[in-house]
Amino acid sequence: MKQLLFMLALVASVFTVNAQEEVQENEAQNPTTGDLYNGFTRPLTFNRMIPPYALEITFTKTVHVIFPAAIRYVDLGSADLLAAKADGAENVLRVKAAAQGFRRESNLSVITEDGSYYTFNVKYADEPVKLSVEMADFLHGWNVENRPGNELPVYLSDLGQESPYLVRLIMETVHRNNRTKLKHIGSKNFGVQYLLKRIYSHNSLLFFHLALKNRSAVPFDVDYIVFRIVDKKIAKRTAIQEQMIIPLRSYNQVTAVAGGKEERTVFALPKFTIPNGKQLIVELIEKDGGRNQMLTVENADLVRAEVIDNLTVRVK
Image (cartoon, rainbow, N blue to C red; front, side, top):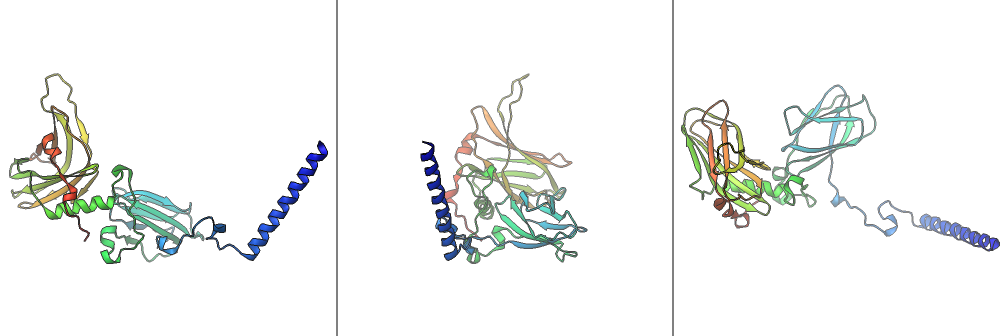
């Protein structure tokens, strides 16, 4: 029995050696290119590659990169790089070297709120020429005819299956068309008027088109805007049940409206409905002032939202 096992092991060893020699001989005759992987996978061609930008950084100065939308993700290729969002700014990234004179090239990747993806090859330079860099976004960085074939948006968790690029286009189109349908929903106080012009629906999102008209001579400074679902009737000694609706995106959200001017904002919100006995309150608060505005939206207004498929969305 032992002799039989020994003979089987010897045969297996000879077979393994022969197989290895055959593989080495095949590789010598047909050397791999690094792309073929012995024919089991397809090579990545250059039309699938996202071309990186060149970025130089240094140890004694900070390089700032300004993006067209808020930064959601940053990845550093090595410990030679230091990067963080600038204090008080969501779309400015400051980058510098962690060590003086590092030799190895590294990389940096950034994803922004509008679904754009940026990649950089980073090198050390004693005196970088470009200390402040401004990036372009999907919507304005390319003409329609010249868009690269591999331009794909990054899908972000808060928008679910919706493309940030498409959401931005919808908001721009709603703002540009400037249609009015809901003439009965508005608020007026001390020469300031706040109107809900229209509600749109697209898959899992709702779009609110709001207009702020300042007919007074005093500028209106916006402090904040709140969307909340509240009870229509609140009994005494009853806890107020509120549900806050947080906007996912906004287009042309202004912080001030000059006297005699009008500004319009489009908000993208997660889809919701209003339970019986409740209503949606849209509250606009003036900064250091008393001309606050409040709109009331019923469920009947919400369910009659215009489907966005009926709105022609056009790329500039």
